[in-house]
Length: 344
Image (cartoon, rainbow, N blue to C red; front, side, top):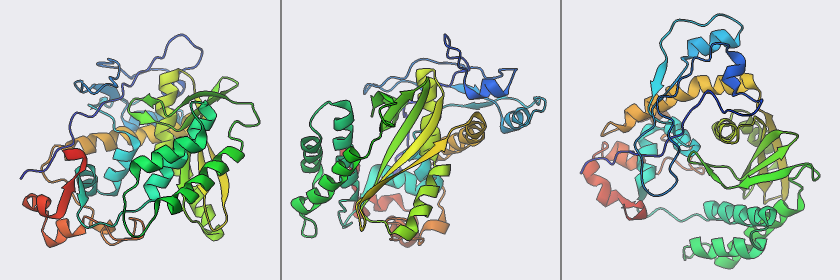
């Protein structure tokens, strides 16, 4: 059996001109040369029909670094990349290319079901329903719970519901509108294969919010959890792509941390998305996407052994460790070790 390849994901067009408004993308504010050329900027197709990859070019890090520092542009050739990847795909790839491949297509057999992701999904659904007024918050959350609940002996549906109900009420009680100064632009709206939870506008600037639900977080661990937002790939990716889509700068990206216990509370951590900060992120992003595209073309992607036993996976070793180490990444073992996701 061959390894499944991560092919034909939608791509995000990169443009050096949004047109019409006074705002220009951050790289144009840093460079008077605008050496950013779109080779094919056909719009993203959000239907189930997969379109050919979008090819575009971007300045090499040396060019961006020199100009951001006030220097002269270099004569380095532009870096051509064939696609971008949503934050989740990029983050799992950075963790381990092999884990990224396996977790996309397979679930290890015998893995205990955890309600953590379902609780987060249901809390999101209820909070978004409240701010968009699309439906009643608690029924919307309950519907998500019942759709995703897996009957088993450890967790009951009603026990999980208590946690979800607490999380939805916390998200409603806290004021995410900035005292009514913010206008909701969109909620969970797909933009270039990204889906930010809430996007607000205030005084001509955009604010992107990402809701995070933690079942438990001790007070002494809170500063470390908030610090993660400062270099969050997801927040920077959202700031770039939603700014591109709406033609306005995303000035702030906020992580809204909903903590269910032991002390239930909501803590919001804003990150100021300055042009310099986004330029630094953009210097890294296309290089990583290009490497991911190369690794996705391989039957067996690289393995990051440094994280196999690191307890990064909800306090446990990597669930795919037996495949990589006991079975030496033998793809003939996939039917024995894994269940395929989504009937693929």
